[in-house]
Length: 195
Image 1 (spheres, rainbow, N blue to C red):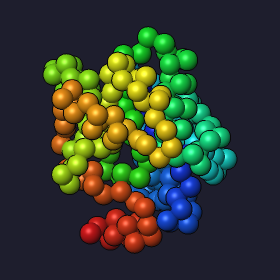
Image 2 (spheres, rainbow, N blue to C red):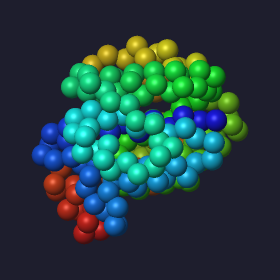
Image 3 (cartoon, rainbow, N blue to C red):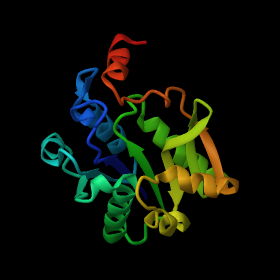
Image 4 (cartoon, helix red, strand yellow):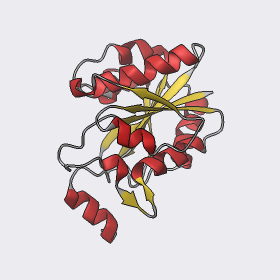
């Protein structure tokens, strides 16, 4: 069993409206990530909302998806990681591993999640990170031995801090278009025009 935590609490400050609700290929970025995560066998999907949570929660049509409202979303990414992981451990204390993902990578697929899980099983490594544009990032899988370190993150710190601290126990899985994420209107227009 694998937890998949979708971090969707940010306020899209550079965009000016919720990026989770941007439409691409007939669905919102939020619907897309929910669909791809829900396609993973034996996965528990949890979405962490924060800013605009009422708008976003209205869009969640998957009954099996658990929602967590992070009232501290303004404190940064660490508070959402904490909210999602705390909920996952409350519901499934025996969970062995967890993937963190975001809404604004439009090319995330079920296969990318499955590749992380497969490589985790094959390599025995504790951290499996997606690699793109010479960096390691989301979606990223953590073995339960890192849950404590994740829960101790502060402020704007995210999963990357844990990846860099434990690089010797990290392996990467290629994610060809992982560097495409939507932070600004310009990013969104490029996505729509296929650039």
